[in-house]
Image (cartoon, rainbow, N blue to C red; front, side, top):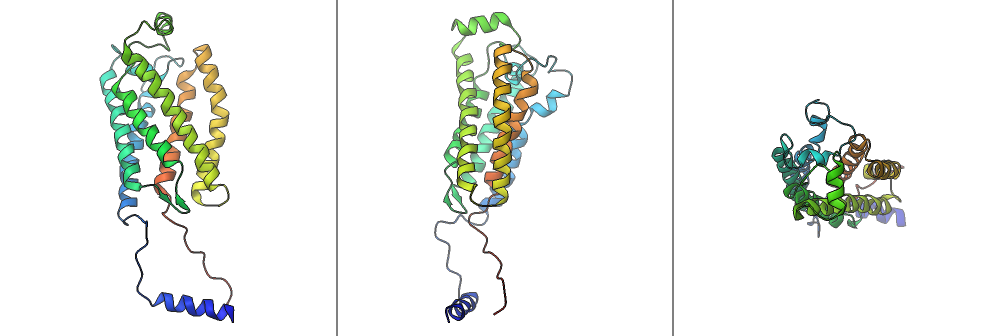
Length: 243
């Protein structure tokens, strides 16, 4: 009898008017957020174009932020790309909203902070290429550089920290399910666990920064795209068995 009642309720529901989903975003917002987010991710990954150009990246030990330092070729263009990327990614996340399959997504505010800190980093660039210049590094530690240099440093730290927290929080939220988001977050988290010691070594030794940083750019981009593509709620599982 209970099975008959469930089947009857399902049959009635199929022919009943569909009530609006409380708390669900308008259906156009997800595809709009995905389209805007893809543009933002493309802007955020400008490094992929310059890394193999042979014109801007001339030393594997430099950081990509060094390319935006005052006096470097195309520095202003790259700064504007970072600024635009942060703004566009923030807009995509706003369009997408916080709602996820199991309710509000705890990682969403952290991703917003990641996008906005990236925009701040684009607005305030390095005063000199500290990854290439010993005198720049020395002046940086003596706090002898202009304030905008330290704003960029702080924005970069916040950018990496908030994106990493977002990955961990998303992993905690999704690990009991097997959504496509779960697999992306799981592999992104593993990549970061491996990459952070390498990044620390690159910073301490001032070597191979241009080879290590892209791992983080790709990982953070994957996390943003997973957030944007994730549906608002669980898809109803297909019916099994026969009536």
